[in-house]
Amino acid sequence: MTVLAVFVVLLFLYSLISAQVEKSTLTAPIAFTVAGVAITLVMAELPSGAVRTDAFLPMAELGLVLLLFTDASRIDLKLLGSMGSLPARLLSVGMLLTIALGTAVALMVFGDLSIWEAGILAAILAPTDAGLGQAIVSSPKVPKRIREALNVEAGLNDGLSVPFLLFFIVQAAPREGTEEAGLLHFFIEQFGYGVGVGLAVGLAGGWLFAGAKARGWVSKSYRQIGFVALPVLCVLGSGAVGASMFIAAFVAGLAVQLGGGKDVAEHSLELTEDWGQVINLSVFFLFGLLTAGQWHDLRPVHFAYAALSLTVIRMLPVAIALIGTGMSRATVLFMGWFGPRGLASIVLGLVYLEHATGRDEPTVHLAVIATVLLSILAHGLSAKPGAAWYSSQVAPDAGEDKTVS
Image (cartoon, rainbow, N blue to C red; front, side, top):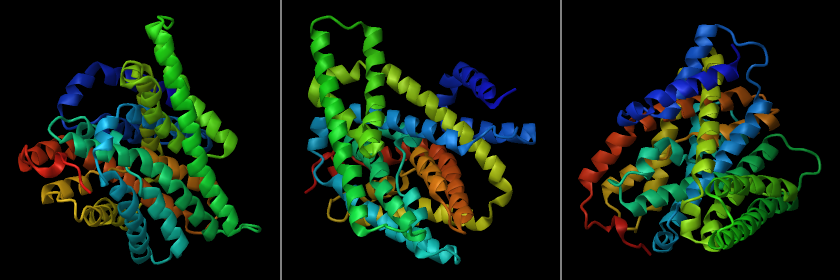
């Protein structure tokens, strides 16, 4: 039985008990990752070429693009406008400190890494994944402003990590002809062009859908199919101009609401979200296969760094970034803990493997595997209990739903 057949059967079987699983503390990423590990153990040895990273990467990238587009399309723009500087704090001070601290800790934990290789590891593990903490970003027990802040952070920090990652890769293995001006040009392409592609696709797509819907030209099923095309257009447009597809997809999701209104986005995303979920589950399943294949190479030091990455390296920068906001200690602790590493780190790790030529490449990718695996389990199992605890700690009239300056 092929790996694809195993995944399809697993997907069907999981759907039969999905409602029961959702009532528990288990999550779909946990189930599919563990299944990937178990299948590898049962099969003893995967067929040659069954899991290829060069085929794995495009699928993982597409899954992340669909996730970012749907997440952004559901963000309440009015609420986002009232969020003050909270997302900016997490994406600037918080993220820069996370990469800096992650680099410093990697140098201490892994004595054989250069500063650039340590930076690569920190950049790969800097972005968060709201999908792993879906119980958090969708829980009414958590103040909406906090949920939206974590969602916006997860939507943008993967794209923001890409230039740091590529910069560190270039410095770790310098190539002839690489200049600072070239790096600046790359940065402008990633961000400026990415935002441009996202705005063009989102505004035009939203406006056209709104107009066609008002005239009764679009059936419900094709409205769904059409919306799947928008994030795919972001991928194609970004590839044509060298932009970040992740930034383009997230900006397009926001722009759809501006072009066509919140109603157009809300009622047109089911198919896009469903396909994104299927692809993401396949990525976690394949991650389980890869993890099992690398298990004999994993050492306690990799899991030690993983534990530090999910705690000190994440939580301390968040606490510093939130200084002056008036947030309660419970909120600072809650936002610091729920920064799961998942799909984005898997994608960036695969991007690194495509470029890796250094002697310490195994150290980096093994630390990434350990961190993502630990996060899938720890954040997945703690999401619902964490939301319940946070709700009990924050009073209804607390400042968490007020604007900060």
